[in-house]
Amino acid sequence: MNILMIYPKPDTSKKPRFGFSYEMLTVATVLSKYHNVYIKDFSCESYDLYNFKKYIHDNNIDIACVECDSYALKRSQNILHAEEIIDILNQHVLTVAYGNYCYITRKKFGNAKCTVTENDINSIIKCINKFETSKIIPYIKDYDELPYINRNLLLEIPFYKENKDNTLLQTAKGCENTCIFCQRKGWQGCYIAHSDEYVLNEIEVIAKQGYKNVWIVDENFTFRLYRAKRLLKKIIESKLYKELRFFISSWANIDEEFLNLANKANIKIISFGIESGNKEILKFYRKNIDIDKVPDIIRYANMIGIFTVGNFIIGAPMENKDTINETFELIRKCEFDQVNIKTLDYMIGSYLYESLNDELKTEDHIFACVEKGLNDFKLKDIQNIKYTFLSDYYQLHRLVIEKKIRLYGTPF
Image (tube, rainbow, N blue to C red):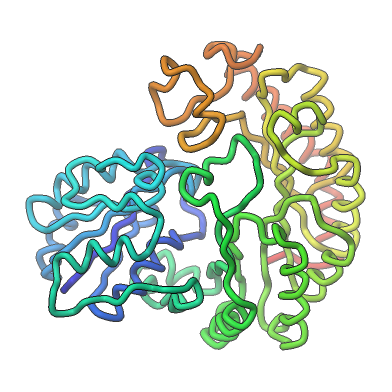
């Protein structure tokens, strides 16, 4: 069959940045072993109805698989456009809806012919097999049975061809931390990891294909710290780090040994999820980190030339000017190279969202603010507080960053 994989444009328009749906490319790779697979990614391609219909007709598309995402790519859902596309596609082809939004809600999505509600590649395979009896796709029995994603499938899209030095890699998925704001619990509560051999072999493939920058998309690369250290030691032993630069996300529960390994393995950026400088708020978030150790860890990473990103949230129910200042003081003390501050968002699939009164669940996400009775700040005031701080911070920190770049070069 001819199968079209579609990533709809996000509901909120934002400037494209490098990154693709790992879910989409994983599914596309599996299906491409048995069928002809095409990809349209409207997070970075322009959408035109006439040309879209012509594409479907010219390629004799039999099935269209539409990914219904939930904040994972560029922090925006894409369900409005997903519904629109499915309604259009239904006039021409069979439609399959899948993706994080479907896994969270576990409901039929719009007018899709089939909705996959289980976050399991075999559920998608089962759905596709319903429509084709002569080429039955076998089930994937183990995480390591998944083929390496076929990155060449993206190169027909100009955006990815222009960014051919960059790619993504997933060594594990899921996280068993207890953070109540995290939406990922809604689609992947358990943690599963590829074997070291699988990861090393895929990294070798990536290097041979000429990629330079590898963004590891694990929710928390250091969730199993002993595994992360073991992997880095093997990357160093294999000398694969000489051809590649890596970028990871991590919590702050790491140590200097890990940072030294990361530095030697050519990890250029570590994005840290810290969330708050106030212990009471961290307890409310169920964020299990030792905040007292954070400044030393971040400063050590900075000192050895790793570029650091700090991720924070303001707007907890007990938030006040003093707790916000504690967070800002922590940021100054750590001297992050980049800082992201988000307003607390009660997102569908998170424990926080489930804790809301039903009358507040009118949308799939609710920003914490006094208007919603969720804290003592007006939403516009929270936005102003964080934008003012970030403007001042970058102005003061500019010379530090410039010096670091002179010493260690740009991270990518």
